[in-house]
Image 1 (cartoon, rainbow, N blue to C red):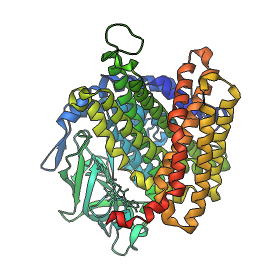
Image 2: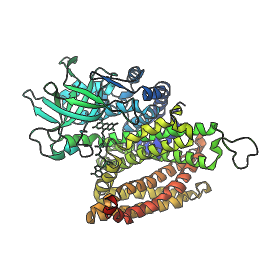
Image 3: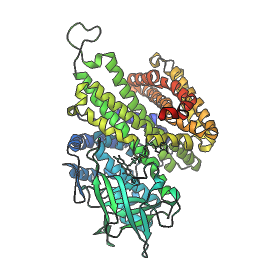
Image 4: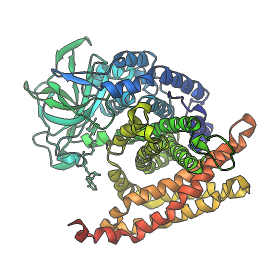
Length: 592
Ligand SMILES: Cc1cc2nc3c(=O)[nH]c(=O)nc-3n(C[C@H](O)[C@H](O)[C@H](O)COP(=O)(O)OP(=O)(O)OC[C@H]3O[C@@H](n4cnc5c(N)ncnc54)[C@H](O)[C@@H]3O)c2cc1C
């Protein structure tokens, strides 16, 4: 089954759930007036359905090959990449000074969802180029920007991000790749990186690697890491392609999913060292990485949303066609499985989780935009803190539900889901990595609890909880029976969130291990309360827009389903966070 971009869902989430329309109206987006959003997404949707979606299965079945240090991608991939970049899709949010279209990140985020839903392994390549562009734009010298940025923005060259080494995964500070200063101001880099996405491929004629390494006199840990730009082919003074640099793919991984995306071992230094150029200052590489981390994590969150959407579309289509048993009240013949309450429950769970994750991700994107675009300094700072708070929640929740929804998709298909023919199994396999890379979801939860809750002395999170409360009040004020218990259940969820937040802010000072033990359940509790409120916000907006044909009844039903079936888990999650820490920290006997 092919993929259709859910343009109406995306627009509602972006404009109303995430507040893009209000932010534009309040002047936070400068010249951008939002008029072209729908047209851009329509075009992206067409490209995704026509060109990228048909290659999803091809990529899964063919995978990639490595021969003599060169990676060959699946049939049709280089051509699709060329068409994609020729159409300008890599440059959507790129800086205008370097050939980009300068559109808001939120628009590009919606496009990222669309590329990833149609073909997640394809969409992963530009996702990393985007991070590379951001690092270079924010921290690179003018000379490096002049040589590399335009080609990265257009997509003529792709980028990689290289942090991981065998002994340095979550603990980036343990990395050992070495960099030595050269008299001409460049550096020579030697070492091995593992798990490098699109470390080599045949879709472009040059690749620009962004590599973390350590100088000989660097301090230990993360304070001694520097960021280097290492081109696959050096670039001559006139911009033409120069000599092959000493960085090569020496191995590729065989993986559970994402078969079409090369995951490479990269070796530097077989021939004296790779020529590299410093980005930012020596020993300040982690600061450069932090600049782009929010955006990179948002992009991975959108992969979770995307796979969940694709799996949901496919499950709905299958459930309408597949006939088994007879639904209650039907007198003859067999019924489509969508008529059975347990299948309905699975489908509604898929749709509700997907939409909540989308709403959270776009709310993060709008906050990131406002942090850069708002004319007012105080508004920019508040938006930055909002984005910092929401980023780990969006990343971990969206990628967790990506796997959960894809798993439900397999279940809806029954045995046909477990065999490869339908594609449901591919979504399940492809989804799994997103909870691991770009900071595991466990690390996201720790980041939320230890760094984000204390922002502005707790004021950032309290302000956000206050916003959720206002949405609950607005739901209650409608007195609309279609909302059922939505207001009551969301009220319970936000109360639980507030108490757990208060407890965590205190317990970090007294018992850090207790806070760390509750971090993951707290993140889910946060996402359920926030996601429930955002879906209610979308339903309220759909009611206001009902005259324009928006599907208010469907939106309200999803908000209600989420509140009554999923947000109700908040109360038990609160108990897990607050009362169950000892059962983790005192359980050494059970771990023996
Ligand atoms: C397909 C794929 C593509 C990738 N692409 C890239 C890429 O392009 N560039 C790149 O640099 N890397 C890439 N990676 C690497 C990826 O980012 C790491 O795998 C990830 O950061 C986790 O590191 P690790 O595998 O060493 O796991 P570990 O760090 O060993 O973690 C194992 C488990 O322990 C937990 N854990 C670790 N430390 C702590 C702690 N302090 N507190 C609590 N829990 C902890 C983790 O949450 C996890 O559950 C990729 C990996 C894969 C599989």
